[in-house]
Image (cartoon, helix red, strand yellow):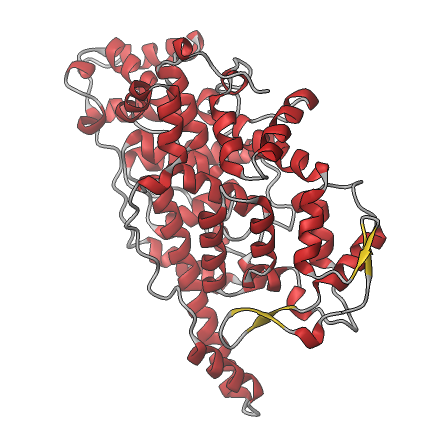
Length: 493
């Protein structure tokens, strides 16, 4: 089984690693608070987030709106082409505004909410069950799925898979809402095995065909914007899945998936890779899967064992994971104790960096890891770092706001002209003692941004920059922060 980290090895650096990976990092004071708790209590503080009140209100539009759906359906059935066009245009504008609000609502929860681990797990599941608003086209459905991940993300594997399959956004995304017994749609049946729960090579094409028949009946009530079961659409004849024959339905099929030993190995490997930053060895993953299955395929016991394990704090794991764009942005805001950029700016930043929330590139989600870093994206990170630190708008163009035509991008650029950014307040993150001289400034910033020292080469560069300054100003310190954020070390966590 997983060997726990010795309590004697627990220190500030280990606490920083835990907060960086199980959350989005934090200030030195936050890390020290976690370090003072000891390993077990620190892990419990993050994982048992139900004990921490979360007063975050949901968006005011995040509820079913049968009247809106009735108006849309009436306009679609109308013979008046102009009425139909106006209704479609109006609804598109509303949805664009709502999805922008939704992105900012979630980023704010990550950056300043009381439950960072819950939001990190929500981010994991968003990438795992990659669903895009570009096809779903309903901000309420996307919010509802996001809340589903938040609500069930550390619970039972079978329950999560079933609820995801019945989720309105997923029903639209993989066309399950269109599936009928005379024309079963195979998309969800295929992806739940290939991408969500088993992986290639652990099912057959026949399993997909039969599973699609089992899933018939799972559908969408568009008027009330919720899942509905349509018994007359369900295929009630026998199906043969994984070598078993019976009159299976969708719930039965999901239960049969989770019963496969591969289902545990598949998801534990993905979770380890997400939090540890590398694919686990077969031996390690066997241990992870054993913990998972021994605890009824519930995620929280697995995650508790993972974050307490010595393997999670091994030298080849610590500070060896490339920050995703969301991790980079949220982590920067947390460690610098500054405000998130305004919604339009945050969206433009993340689009440029390759991680547009609620719009993953395809059903496989984002590749992650080293693919986050290209010559262009690295330069963009450096420019965005300067924008965050100095409170200036980053260099964005109309094309950074989508490919739905020039008009929307031009409107976004015009709106940016009214945007103001806060920037970093030196007095907030450095005490007077830490601003005594260049050596104390560099040491304090290294402690805050990296929890370790930079390479000697980069320290030398900083020293040469600061040596040229007669009297160090706040502007010089901000430039120093920008230079630190423009190092390879800052791109990993």
